[in-house]
Image 1 (cartoon, one colour):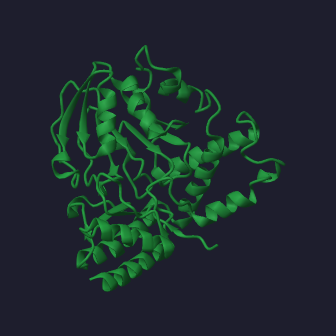
Image 2 (cartoon, one colour; image 1 turned 30 degrees about the horizontal axis):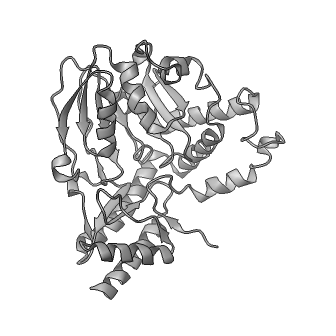
Image 3 (cartoon, rainbow, N blue to C red; image 1 turned 180 degrees about the horizontal axis):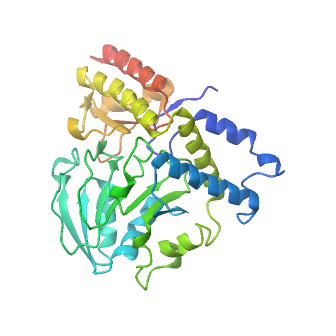
Length: 357
């Protein structure tokens, strides 16, 4: 069977060269006589894998030396708890709510202190990202979700929070293009959208933030403990880290994040240009806040949406059904989706429109 074009919001498709390299090394990595799945995380062979993976991520994102990179488990959702547990010193935090995941993060933080929701785009079903430039003077941190997977929106600015650390959930936007890490106190992301397979969560944290965990913080959620143990306080998600390392090398070989951004913008332009000129399909996110990773659109007819997803799946374009809170369709066009995949999707959409208008 030929490979399909997988538009899943996550776990998402991986670059074919990465999958092929992993297949070659599946039973015998680097002449070790065993799979990465089998080897001890304390072995010199695996230590070289995890150290090189960190080095390549630092190179890709130009991560400053005063930031720690942690390879953890539990998904970004676990970090909804870890953030307040590590950072709520006075018990107050600001949140900008621009979608479901930032809403969940704010709700989780309420267990540990006072959450001030500075702004929310819920009034328009999260079709835009609120602009905020004023923050609570006594806030321990400001939290945002950089890219909103479900609603297809993205921050088009970095909030200027001054001395207050800015925390960003970048799960569905990380590595899609360059970002100034120094503008953030903490960046965290689940790997299963743009970095690798499910099971790995990356946390990038400025060193001065470490060491402030609340007394009730579980040891596995204490960033300082994880940093002191180079992400190996317990057995890390070894194979997911290895595959993420292959993805980082793939992006570096493409030319890094500047080149990745050009490719992603080209893909997004192909799809949005078609949608903006379509008489059947309509994008749901406001223009200035459109995500280049998750493109949401509808026909306005739920039955026709269902028909489109069914026919698209049979044609090899899978996982296009939108989230239930938005409906319609969602094409997640992460880094691994080739330009060709988006172009062929647009060809199919144009044909569907001709047949159903």
